[in-house]
Length: 146
Image (cartoon, rainbow, N blue to C red; front, side, top):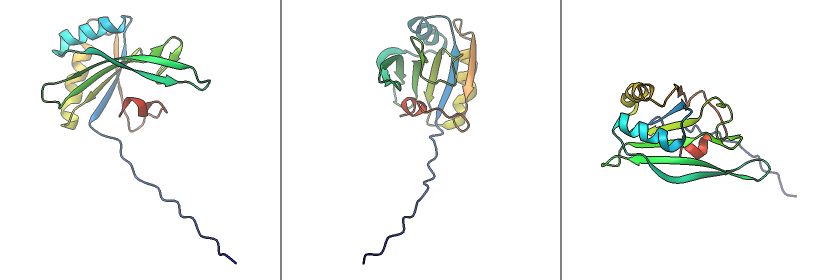
């Protein structure tokens, strides 16, 4: 007779990357106009890049536009991602947000306040929300932070 083995469940403590900052942007402008305004204000060069392709519960694929920029040293990465595709949302808990602005900064917190003030000062931006990744939970967040 074979004895049954005891199964032990192990919880891994995976910390989210604290070098990513996410901002929710409310803007009535289309993505290309907003990217141009951000380029002028922040001194960067966001360019159209490969969009996010996500399938919903019914299997229908939705496409969310993305504009990206990496500085010369490859240290700082900026992504402007649309939060809407037709009537679908990338981050469903943020239906009032039109765009997600992601910043990867290796120095951590030094970047947060400067980016926030630049975003708020951009002419096409109506409102900016800092998205705290420690408290915010959405299943599609994994597709933004890769």
